[in-house]
Image (cartoon, rainbow, N blue to C red; front, side, top):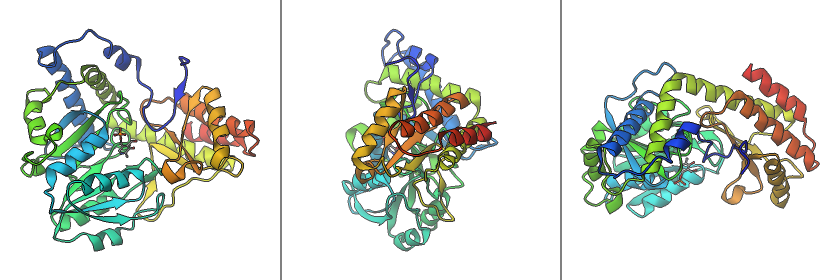
Length: 390
Ligand code: PLP
């Protein structure tokens, strides 16, 4: 791998040198004071991110606890759902992309599920959600930033609906938390989930949950999967440990990554992500390409990744040539997932990217299309991004 190879796929994202170095330190026991210090640093940094993801870094939660899991966000999603439901409980899953569908599929293994589904890439119609949620609903799930389509979903409005029926609200903030605004209490979020390798710019293989104090009493862990017994995790987290052997190098990387976020400050970080994603969108439109997601009054384009429709000449099997051309220029971007394969490509601006790295992504996308004979205005794309980043 070239030293300057640039990962612009929506996770894993590039790691800082300090994060990488922390992961190669000599091994310690997961029951040692040395490890407890690592856990505590990671937990403090995560609680800062979960609780202060606003432009002015004001606190958004009256109280809660960050738990760190040995496993990616899918494990966290299942942990969150399975600790809140019994098999007869009703859960409403809002689905408008691959990760909303993942929540639905997870929940189907643990309780009765009513999906509220929209075409992938279409916005959530909150009236349909309001029709589906009732006083019998135990839990509502939603993905804040749908990574498969580049849409920012109306978490605040859906949280209001859940709260009006006293349902618990579980939010996947995997590609928003650490890069965009996230408000725990204002949005009635009971449990939030995030992943290491996305906007936190930590290594893959580790995830975190934020459990608001108001929901902690609903979690007794007894019927939860053994590995994701959140009551047990919470008790061990009080001692800065995990119930089972911790993935020590990953925890070390995470502890540095969240301290780097704190050093930048969430306000700055949100502003930077918004500016960089707007620059990318401007570039795409100036090149003559089209953004993929559809918006309504309650939805927005993602501030952490951009999903773009493949132009004629690069669709379906022809998309391979585009991805190869991007790769040959030392950059990686992602294609569409499931039925969106060959239909879209996705570019991330999560983590600690500089404006220059973002511009490199814009240049490479434009040149890759030119390489394969697709007519785009690459120079106009770069100029538009430069203008926004100025
Ligand atoms: N949720 C969202 C929004 C994601 O983007 C992803 C991964 O891309 C996941 C959940 C699942 O993460 P993992 O595959 O790391 O478990």
